[in-house]
Image (cartoon, rainbow, N blue to C red; front, side):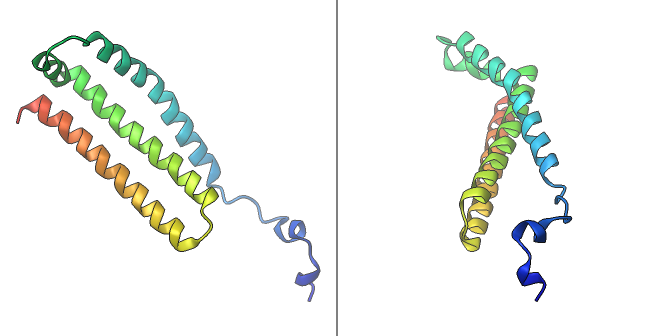
Length: 128
């Protein structure tokens, strides 16, 4: 009977945090910070290759430094995208089965696209 008379604040008071928010917050901030120089490098590099023929661009992608930076950029981009979409889904989808389905689809899709991107870079870098 006493529980029914408590306000929502009284029920939640003293429970503390789940201690999960800070880790997610830092993960998003660090991936955002990593994407800034990676994206700037990528844009400048692609603009620098405007007008180059296909073989020249493939040779650029196959070089060690660009290949490594592309793989890192792909990994960080899809990690950041999956995390951001997860937050949106958790905040705005309220039906549990829809939320779970979308979370699984987003994670699977991001992993699939990241692996495909890394495979493409590796295939160019190491030859077919």
